[in-house]
Image 1 (tube, rainbow, N blue to C red):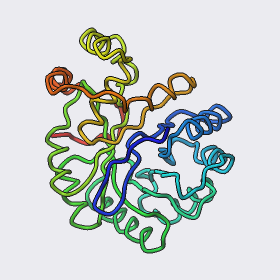
Image 2 (cartoon, helix red, strand yellow; image 1 turned 135 degrees about the vertical axis):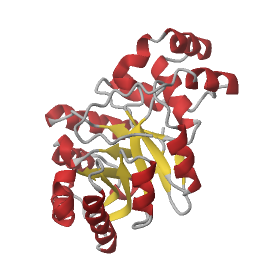
Image 3 (cartoon, helix red, strand yellow; image 1 turned 120 degrees about the vertical axis):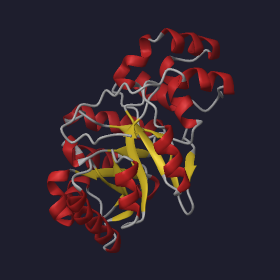
Image 4 (tube, helix red, strand yellow; image 1 turned 90 degrees about the vertical axis):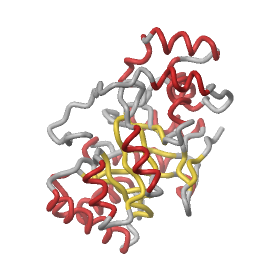
Length: 269
């Protein structure tokens, strides 16, 4: 089974990506190989994850043509001043001549962001990436980025316990798509009584319920898993649809319960 795509103006992004944060070594290679075999066609990584080499190996080992796999990687702020060199190092590790989406991993100060965005523009010109974007940018910083570069994506933390409605509305008004990392709130959704009750109603797991909630908002999701059962389960979410009432019930759980803790975390609206 190959998942649906979020359709943009001139391209499509596989709606369910495979997250790889903290996956390294043979565990990472095996998990990515299994994900590709099952039907995932979007692999998300970052220089900070220190697993690009493993992912490159898994993609090479698979029987799937590289053109059918959407690879996303990210440049960390410490490399913003030398983005092209950092990107070339990523491509070497990933064993490919280009990625499909290149992101700035976290925002820095505005002046440094401008330098990094010019680097993204240069990566586009050199064919190192098909599309460019950012991650963890709030509306103010995203507006500045859009004025300088054709960014198409903002990857942010999004799950039932945090509202991203204002940011999502801004992005859709600028023909951008959102990717949700930590879509399952690092497993915290599993024990939620409201979500458990709704999942039982649809005869699905809580993880499947939450991923479906995000997908019905046209959000790209990148859940991580290592067990083959979970990898398969997270992809099997296209055979049911949540009612409007249940979509609202899940959204009503939202507040500002962020689980990401980083020194690079921006001030959010």
